[in-house]
Length: 72
Image 1 (cartoon, rainbow, N blue to C red):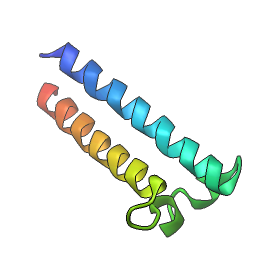
Image 2: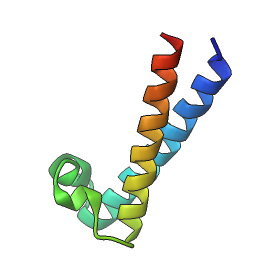
Image 3: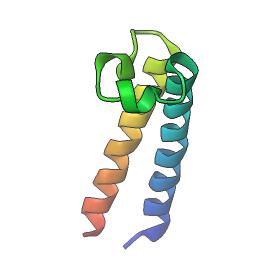
Image 4: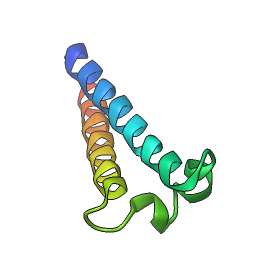
């Protein structure tokens, strides 16, 4: 069991989630994540900062899930 690897993926997930949430708040205000997080607006248009943040977050989620499964 590689706890360090799990900790690393969790830290990356936390950072990328904060970056995405920050973009959502910047674009849509304090309720941006709640209002638009699961809609197209939460993904953003190609090439935009919110899309880059969303994609980084999705990648981090997938990495974290793979590591959790590997340690189960």
